[in-house]
Image 1 (tube, rainbow, N blue to C red):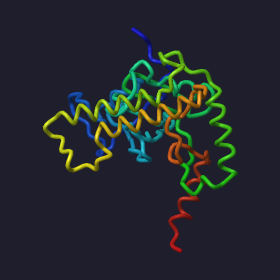
Image 2: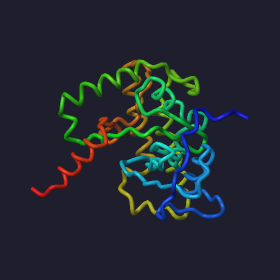
Image 3: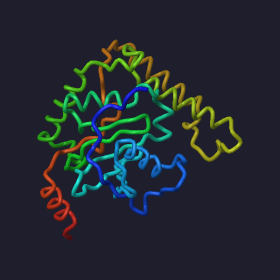
Length: 246
């Protein structure tokens, strides 16, 4: 049996009422969170976790520190993640980013999710994208990521994964269109699978003509997926200033 990578984080984590738990392990986010941290060696009855909501396609929690453990971030894979990616590739880019110090350190992982160190800071906002003091360092970080070798877990390193992602999700739409619950009249015409497939084919053809090299990329580079590191006291001070009435 293959061992999970990384050392388990120090223990004692608590689960608040808003994270649903049950005696049996149905595939609910809260149960998967408990399973992840328990597998990591955390044996407490409760986990003090706050769900994060910055546009993640997976389930992500901030797990509060205790006197015996530092704060961590726990990510549980969602059904959408399973649709568009192959299981053997899960966590591969997280490990690269961790090793190259281009993201938070991975401290534990399984096929259910990943536990990272917590980095104090804030996610970028749209207005940050016009600030050269932010954009220039971000561009350098992205360049470092692009220079990393594509992990061997990806079977087709010479083929951009974006097409695999898109066609996988398109296949799910086509499957839904065949069910009785699907009502095509409630959606705009551009949501039809035949229209989407034509759009994807056109984009793929146009990009292939450019003959660009395939590099390791982020896949969803937007403000909410980048962070500025800030000491906790500076972050709290900024949040207080933003909440002050004008």
